[in-house]
Image (cartoon, rainbow, N blue to C red; front, side, top):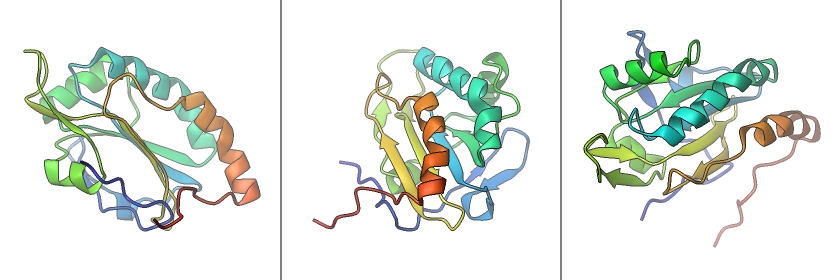
Length: 174
């Protein structure tokens, strides 16, 4: 069973290629508030298309609150590029080629294809927020395409978190 990284601890490393021909490294990010990593299942997923379209609608609002976003999947470059273009996700960075080892580091559920249109293996959806210092603040990991956090609700909480210096939760040791 996957083990989600611990809140208020250093987030796992993430170094992933982007469809624009460069690399994206979590350690190089310097958002005002958070880096938002959105893991999507892949091009085959209509629920992902709908969810990432919502991300796109709120992208400028997230940026205005200091939240920088990246989309990441285990898809190939061609599939990621197709999703990015066909789903109208520009200018949000689109990462691809997430490995099973990286998925395990982030506590993601990984599935095998049950339909021909699906990639052979893919990560299930997740949303992570990482503070500028690399601390994991929020982790929402799902084993199903049907359970994802409400993006407008998350956006609405950024100011509260910043103003109240609201800590990461779920940190009590077992």
